[in-house]
Image (tube, rainbow, N blue to C red):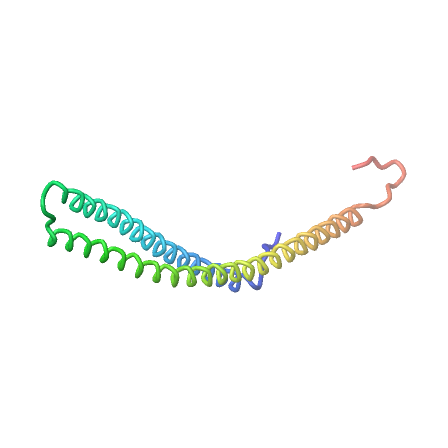
Length: 157
């Protein structure tokens, strides 16, 4: 029996490779998004700690004089973390836009690959039907070729 050969197999392979490349691109952007979100969470935790430390320094003022230098350092540290978090948020917004467009491209590439796969499946079904018809014709020809009327007194084969 002959083997099925899909003429567009190289196109299908190329589309699969393009989809895999895009999938890796989406994963890289997802990692970048995750890292930026972690930076923002770390900044938020640091801001909370710095504010608590500043409140501790200012709260201790009732007991003794306030060390303005320490208070200023802690306030500046908190402001630095706020600035760092804001920068990360801006970067994250850009990453979200890139991620959205990369996912849209991935969906487009997946649809293009699936279209060729559907064509391949249809051609395979057609090929199988054709092979079954050829086989049925060949069997019919064998049966007709072997058939011959029996002569009187001849035993069946």
